[in-house]
Length: 238
Image (cartoon, rainbow, N blue to C red; front, side, top):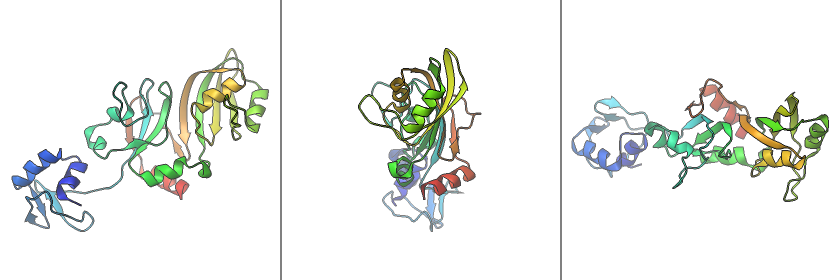
Protein backbone atom coordinates (compact mmCIF):
# COMPACT_ATOMS: atom_id res chain seq x y z
CA UNK A 1 0.00 0.00 0.00
CA UNK A 2 1.23 3.52 -0.76
CA UNK A 3 2.34 5.40 2.35
CA UNK A 4 0.24 8.47 1.49
CA UNK A 5 -2.91 6.39 1.09
CA UNK A 6 -2.27 4.52 4.33
CA UNK A 7 -1.82 7.69 6.36
CA UNK A 8 -4.83 9.37 4.76
CA UNK A 9 -6.97 6.29 5.44
CA UNK A 10 -6.26 6.36 9.15
CA UNK A 11 -6.96 10.04 9.63
CA UNK A 12 -3.69 11.92 9.24
CA UNK A 13 -5.35 14.27 6.78
CA UNK A 14 -6.09 14.51 3.09
CA UNK A 15 -3.61 13.22 0.50
CA UNK A 16 -2.45 16.83 0.06
CA UNK A 17 -1.91 17.28 3.82
CA UNK A 18 -0.08 13.95 4.06
CA UNK A 19 2.14 15.00 1.16
CA UNK A 20 3.17 18.10 3.12
CA UNK A 21 3.99 15.94 6.17
CA UNK A 22 6.17 13.69 4.04
CA UNK A 23 8.04 16.60 2.45
CA UNK A 24 8.61 18.08 5.92
CA UNK A 25 10.36 14.88 7.01
CA UNK A 26 7.75 13.95 9.59
CA UNK A 27 7.30 10.33 8.44
CA UNK A 28 9.73 7.44 8.85
CA UNK A 29 9.52 3.81 7.79
CA UNK A 30 11.85 1.36 9.51
CA UNK A 31 13.82 4.28 10.96
CA UNK A 32 14.36 5.93 7.56
CA UNK A 33 12.69 9.18 6.52
CA UNK A 34 10.21 8.82 3.65
CA UNK A 35 9.34 11.82 1.51
CA UNK A 36 7.79 10.12 -1.51
CA UNK A 37 4.08 9.41 -1.06
CA UNK A 38 4.23 6.74 -3.73
CA UNK A 39 6.52 4.52 -1.66
CA UNK A 40 4.85 1.23 -0.82
CA UNK A 41 4.82 -0.13 2.71
CA UNK A 42 3.54 -3.26 4.37
CA UNK A 43 1.54 -2.13 7.43
CA UNK A 44 1.81 -5.62 8.96
CA UNK A 45 5.61 -5.76 8.75
CA UNK A 46 7.01 -2.23 8.46
CA UNK A 47 7.43 0.09 11.45
CA UNK A 48 5.86 3.42 10.53
CA UNK A 49 6.43 6.57 12.60
CA UNK A 50 4.69 9.94 12.32
CA UNK A 51 6.14 12.75 14.45
CA UNK A 52 8.15 10.02 16.19
CA UNK A 53 5.05 8.05 17.24
CA UNK A 54 4.36 4.59 15.87
CA UNK A 55 1.35 4.21 13.59
CA UNK A 56 -0.92 1.20 14.07
CA UNK A 57 -2.84 0.48 10.91
CA UNK A 58 -6.09 -1.46 10.72
CA UNK A 59 -8.08 -2.36 7.66
CA UNK A 60 -11.62 -2.63 9.01
CA UNK A 61 -13.80 -0.64 11.36
CA UNK A 62 -17.01 -1.77 13.08
CA UNK A 63 -19.40 0.78 14.58
CA UNK A 64 -22.69 0.47 16.48
CA UNK A 65 -25.00 3.44 16.08
CA UNK A 66 -28.30 4.31 17.72
CA UNK A 67 -29.77 5.76 14.55
CA UNK A 68 -31.99 8.80 15.10
CA UNK A 69 -35.17 9.49 13.13
CA UNK A 70 -34.89 11.88 10.21
CA UNK A 71 -31.53 10.53 9.06
CA UNK A 72 -31.23 8.15 6.13
CA UNK A 73 -29.22 4.92 6.03
CA UNK A 74 -26.96 5.83 3.14
CA UNK A 75 -23.36 6.84 2.55
CA UNK A 76 -24.22 10.11 0.79
CA UNK A 77 -27.19 12.15 -0.31
CA UNK A 78 -27.46 15.59 -1.88
CA UNK A 79 -30.53 16.62 0.13
CA UNK A 80 -30.83 14.46 3.24
CA UNK A 81 -28.55 14.01 6.24
CA UNK A 82 -27.04 10.52 6.27
CA UNK A 83 -25.72 8.29 9.04
CA UNK A 84 -22.21 8.88 7.67
CA UNK A 85 -22.65 12.60 8.31
CA UNK A 86 -22.91 11.76 12.02
CA UNK A 87 -19.43 10.20 12.14
CA UNK A 88 -16.26 11.88 13.37
CA UNK A 89 -13.50 12.30 10.78
CA UNK A 90 -11.36 9.62 12.43
CA UNK A 91 -14.07 7.07 11.67
CA UNK A 92 -15.40 8.49 8.41
CA UNK A 93 -11.97 8.15 6.77
CA UNK A 94 -12.43 4.37 6.82
CA UNK A 95 -15.40 4.87 4.46
CA UNK A 96 -17.85 2.65 6.37
CA UNK A 97 -21.36 1.95 5.10
CA UNK A 98 -24.56 0.85 6.85
CA UNK A 99 -25.21 -2.89 6.96
CA UNK A 100 -28.76 -2.98 5.68
CA UNK A 101 -31.11 -0.04 6.03
CA UNK A 102 -33.44 1.46 8.56
CA UNK A 103 -36.27 3.66 7.28
CA UNK A 104 -35.77 7.40 7.66
CA UNK A 105 -38.24 7.59 10.56
CA UNK A 106 -36.98 4.38 12.25
CA UNK A 107 -34.63 4.46 15.23
CA UNK A 108 -32.24 2.01 16.78
CA UNK A 109 -29.42 -0.38 16.08
CA UNK A 110 -27.43 0.19 12.93
CA UNK A 111 -24.12 -1.49 12.19
CA UNK A 112 -21.63 0.42 10.06
CA UNK A 113 -18.47 -1.14 8.67
CA UNK A 114 -16.17 -1.22 5.67
CA UNK A 115 -15.97 -5.02 5.88
CA UNK A 116 -17.90 -6.02 2.77
CA UNK A 117 -17.56 -9.74 3.43
CA UNK A 118 -19.18 -9.47 6.87
CA UNK A 119 -21.93 -7.21 5.53
CA UNK A 120 -22.76 -9.60 2.70
CA UNK A 121 -23.06 -12.58 5.00
CA UNK A 122 -25.17 -10.77 7.57
CA UNK A 123 -27.57 -9.63 4.85
CA UNK A 124 -27.66 -12.88 2.88
CA UNK A 125 -31.17 -14.39 2.82
CA UNK A 126 -29.55 -17.80 3.19
CA UNK A 127 -28.20 -16.89 6.63
CA UNK A 128 -31.63 -16.09 8.17
CA UNK A 129 -30.07 -13.57 10.56
CA UNK A 130 -32.78 -12.55 13.07
CA UNK A 131 -33.60 -8.88 13.64
CA UNK A 132 -35.77 -7.78 16.56
CA UNK A 133 -37.81 -4.59 16.61
CA UNK A 134 -39.84 -2.74 19.20
CA UNK A 135 -42.90 -1.00 17.78
CA UNK A 136 -45.96 0.95 18.83
CA UNK A 137 -48.98 -0.13 16.81
CA UNK A 138 -52.14 1.85 16.21
CA UNK A 139 -54.83 -0.65 17.14
CA UNK A 140 -55.08 -3.65 19.44
CA UNK A 141 -52.65 -6.43 18.57
CA UNK A 142 -54.23 -9.82 19.30
CA UNK A 143 -53.44 -13.51 19.52
CA UNK A 144 -54.78 -13.81 15.98
CA UNK A 145 -52.02 -11.47 14.80
CA UNK A 146 -49.42 -13.56 16.61
CA UNK A 147 -50.66 -16.64 14.77
CA UNK A 148 -50.79 -14.82 11.43
CA UNK A 149 -47.19 -13.65 11.82
CA UNK A 150 -46.13 -17.16 12.90
CA UNK A 151 -47.51 -18.54 9.63
CA UNK A 152 -46.27 -15.63 7.51
CA UNK A 153 -48.41 -12.83 6.11
CA UNK A 154 -49.06 -11.76 2.53
CA UNK A 155 -47.66 -8.32 1.72
CA UNK A 156 -49.20 -5.80 -0.65
CA UNK A 157 -47.16 -7.13 -3.57
CA UNK A 158 -48.26 -10.73 -2.98
CA UNK A 159 -45.05 -11.84 -1.25
CA UNK A 160 -45.60 -14.22 1.67
CA UNK A 161 -43.17 -13.48 4.48
CA UNK A 162 -41.20 -16.06 6.39
CA UNK A 163 -42.53 -16.75 9.90
CA UNK A 164 -42.10 -13.90 12.38
CA UNK A 165 -42.16 -14.09 16.17
CA UNK A 166 -44.58 -11.48 17.51
CA UNK A 167 -44.73 -10.72 21.24
CA UNK A 168 -47.33 -8.39 22.75
CA UNK A 169 -45.70 -6.21 25.42
CA UNK A 170 -48.80 -4.07 26.07
CA UNK A 171 -52.17 -4.32 24.39
CA UNK A 172 -54.67 -1.51 23.91
CA UNK A 173 -55.70 1.21 21.46
CA UNK A 174 -51.96 1.61 20.96
CA UNK A 175 -50.13 -1.69 21.45
CA UNK A 176 -46.45 -2.14 22.30
CA UNK A 177 -44.92 -5.18 20.62
CA UNK A 178 -41.63 -6.86 19.80
CA UNK A 179 -41.20 -8.59 16.47
CA UNK A 180 -38.37 -10.83 15.33
CA UNK A 181 -37.99 -11.49 11.60
CA UNK A 182 -35.27 -13.08 9.48
CA UNK A 183 -35.79 -11.03 6.32
CA UNK A 184 -35.23 -7.44 5.29
CA UNK A 185 -37.82 -6.56 2.68
CA UNK A 186 -38.53 -2.90 1.99
CA UNK A 187 -40.58 -1.41 4.88
CA UNK A 188 -41.21 -5.00 5.97
CA UNK A 189 -42.40 -4.45 9.54
CA UNK A 190 -44.79 -1.69 8.48
CA UNK A 191 -46.11 -3.76 5.60
CA UNK A 192 -46.59 -6.84 7.78
CA UNK A 193 -48.82 -4.90 10.16
CA UNK A 194 -50.63 -3.26 7.27
CA UNK A 195 -51.41 -6.80 6.07
CA UNK A 196 -53.38 -7.39 9.28
CA UNK A 197 -55.09 -4.00 9.19
CA UNK A 198 -52.86 -2.09 11.61
CA UNK A 199 -50.40 0.80 11.41
CA UNK A 200 -46.91 1.20 12.88
CA UNK A 201 -46.55 4.61 14.55
CA UNK A 202 -43.10 4.08 16.11
CA UNK A 203 -40.35 1.63 15.20
CA UNK A 204 -36.98 0.88 16.77
CA UNK A 205 -34.54 -1.93 16.01
CA UNK A 206 -33.22 -3.62 19.14
CA UNK A 207 -30.92 -6.30 17.75
CA UNK A 208 -29.37 -7.86 14.68
CA UNK A 209 -28.15 -11.40 15.09
CA UNK A 210 -26.16 -11.51 18.35
CA UNK A 211 -25.60 -7.73 18.37
CA UNK A 212 -27.79 -5.90 20.91
CA UNK A 213 -28.32 -2.14 20.90
CA UNK A 214 -26.37 -0.44 23.69
CA UNK A 215 -29.17 1.43 25.45
CA UNK A 216 -26.62 3.87 26.88
CA UNK A 217 -26.13 5.29 23.39
CA UNK A 218 -28.27 8.39 22.90
CA UNK A 219 -29.97 8.89 19.55
CA UNK A 220 -27.29 9.80 17.02
CA UNK A 221 -24.46 8.45 19.16
CA UNK A 222 -22.25 5.54 18.19
CA UNK A 223 -19.22 3.59 19.38
CA UNK A 224 -16.86 0.95 18.11
CA UNK A 225 -17.89 -2.63 18.75
CA UNK A 226 -16.41 -4.29 21.80
CA UNK A 227 -14.10 -7.27 21.12
CA UNK A 228 -16.74 -9.68 22.45
CA UNK A 229 -19.45 -8.19 20.24
CA UNK A 230 -17.22 -8.45 17.18
CA UNK A 231 -16.37 -12.03 18.06
CA UNK A 232 -20.07 -12.92 18.28
CA UNK A 233 -20.71 -11.27 14.90
CA UNK A 234 -17.86 -13.17 13.27
CA UNK A 235 -19.22 -16.41 14.70
CA UNK A 236 -22.64 -15.50 13.29
CA UNK A 237 -21.34 -14.96 9.77
CA UNK A 238 -19.01 -17.96 9.58
